[in-house]
Every structure is written in structure tokens, then in C-alpha cells.
Length: 421
Image 1 (cartoon, helix red, strand yellow):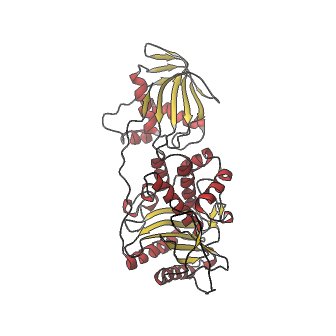
Image 2 (spheres, rainbow, N blue to C red):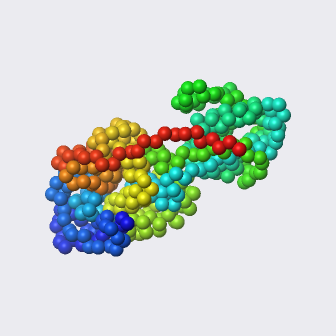
Image 3 (cartoon, rainbow, N blue to C red):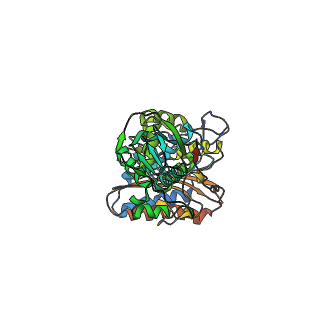
């Protein structure tokens, strides 16, 4: 088995940002072959220490004090390379989604899917369905225009062109990242009727395979939201597999997906103890109020962020994945890193609030192997200053240690997710 945690005791009190600027015991996450914590040998890396010090000096020169910054850099073997306020909980913004990803993947299987059920309490008379169309949500956080269009096309293959009844929505049905079910119902109604499409829907339709139909199903009634409804199932529609939902969430840092998942995991009160157990970080170093990271109340220590990443890699590996399958790599130039400057093999998660900029992940190097890091920066002003400082940390380490890519995302292609009844 992989393993959990190792404690590293600082034997001196060097007044430098090279090591841990704290009299407390420093936690260094160590991958070992059993679950027994061991005392790792102390040892910092002069290159990492120098890069960290320059990072802090650069920010301080721009008016961002050291007291607001956090850094943790360690290698795959559990050796702490450099740290600054490594055990202090700081606002992490969307790095919270690392915690949400770990909680989801350790609760559900990588290929778990959320199923939306389409049913009716009526019967078909010619091309008219006399009765209600029932949409029973399965808490799919990534149900969008394209999915509604596909369902509309399938309903037409059943001979349905008109629904003489209401659109009834039950359970957790979310569409286009709207958690309001009335709004989601309105989106669905538009998706299955091309006469109601606007430019936004047309744009998404054009991403579908050539030859995809444009459904034209009219609903004569109104929208009703009910706690439950019974009827004959017409079709079910599966979500993307969980690991693909998580990857899309992390690439675009989608807050709605993260908060929907956290809600279905039972909320932060239930999730935090699980995260502590999986990662070995002290409970006082993680404070979460939601799954997305919105708000200053989501705080994790720099070493806690790294511990969560390593625990997540353990969960991913057990299911045939790596972090490259759950987060964007520098080479993708996509989502929140589209305009950032990273090496192609870097595996990254960003976070941003009005006065917070964070970055965490893994850099893949020739000379130090996998290097895990968390950079937590804070201060009002130009966010690009933080971006540049973070990029310089990673690029400096690469200049010294060279890149050697071990993890790459595995290929995946979506398939037909309709389940006819």
C-alpha cells in the first residue's frame, strides 16, 4: 500500500524562509510502504530555498508582506525542500476543489455516473403525448444544452412532437450550472424545442456531431416543481463518468459543480473528518465552508494542500488514474491556465479571490523526480503580480532540475449516454 504521513522535527530555528518559519513540528507528507508514520530526515534543498526566498522578496518589494504568504515544496520521497508558514491555514480560494476532488473520488468510483430520468404519466395519441413530461434529476452537475438536445432528439424517435401537459421537475435536476430548478426546467424546455433556441443554444448545438437533429417538441403546459412524481420511464441519461466531471471542474474551476458535489457528499461537516483521515493533516489546518472555495473562510495550510494532493494521487492510482487525469497540465493552455506560462508537464490547480491568488500541484523533473508544491499568496492589488511570481517559482525550479514527464492524461472519448427503456 501507499502511505500516509511522516513528521519532521525542526531541530533548529534558522531565521530564514528556507525552512519552516514556525516553532511547531513540521509535517512532511511521505509516501511509504505502510501506514505507520515515521520520522523523516530533515533536509532542505538550497535551490528550492533560494527560489522561495526570492519569491517572498519579490512580493514584499511590491507591497505584499511575508506574513500573508505561504509556501510548501517537497519531493516524492517526503523530503521537505522549502517552506514559509507551512502549517498556517490561509485562504486557498479554488484550491478547495482539490479537497472536493479527493472527497468525491474516495466516496464514489471513478466511473460513477449521475442518472437523469425522463418519464411520463400520460400516453401517446398520434404525435401528442397526453400527460406530463417528468424530469427526475440525479444530481448531475454537468448537464448542459447538448444533453437536453440529445434527449429531445430521442423523444422524437418515440414519435413525440407535442406534450399536452406540464413539464414536471423532481429531485436534483440542474442544467447549465443553474441550481434553481425552475430555471433549469426552463433551459430544458428550450433545449428540446429549436423554435426557442437563441445564439447561445445554437453555438452549443454546433459542437455536436454533424447530422445531429434539432428537436422540435412543444410543451403546452407550465413548469411544476414537485418533491416526487411517478410515471412510465421513457429514457434515462447518464452523466459523464465522475473522473471526467472532476477534470472539467478543475480545468475551468467551476464553482457550481464543486458545490453540487460537496452537497451530495454530505457537506463540509461530514467531509472534513474524512479528508483529515485520508491525508493525515491536523484538523486545525483545514477549514471549509463549501466545495468551491468561494469566500475567505476556506482555509488550508500550505502543507495541508500538498497532503491532500498526495492523498488524492493515492486514490487516483488505486483506480487506474493519476493527477494528470484530474487536473489540467501546462501543455493544455486551457481553462484557468490558458494565459499562464508553465512547463508542459506541470499538473496544476489555480485559485483566485479578490485578494487571493493560489497555485498548487506537481512539477515533473529529471533531477528531483515529482516535486509537490503549494503557493498561497494574498494581498490587494494587481493579481498578475502574483501570477508572475508563481510562474517564476516553477520555471526557476525547472531551469535547475529540468523537466521529465512521467504522468500524462489518458485518452478518453465520450460515448452515447442515452439508456433507452
